[in-house]
Image (cartoon, rainbow, N blue to C red; front, side):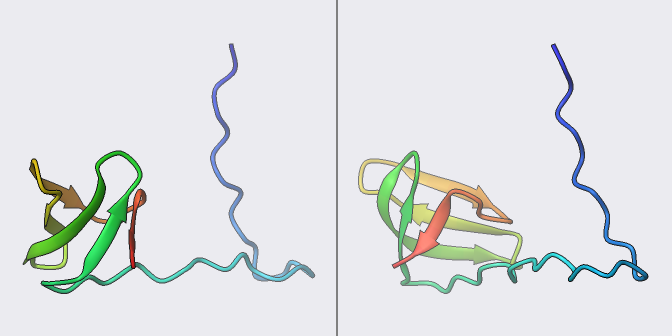
Amino acid sequence: MTKPSAPKRFLPTSPFKAPVTPPPQQFAVGDQVTHDVHGLGRVTGIENGTAAVVDFGSVQERIVSPYAKMTKL
């Protein structure tokens, strides 16, 4: 069994372009979102940009940043 390798770091002297990292997603109260596990929901609260409270109908969940499994619709 092998360990997953860490992402390679970019060297400024490299002739190749630096990998593009997308900016973190920003959510606002009232945004409609979809989550890979919980499905469709609506943002009901934001906690200092570090977490979003989302109402998925049957359950409310606190989703922490970087919101890897959640996208804004």
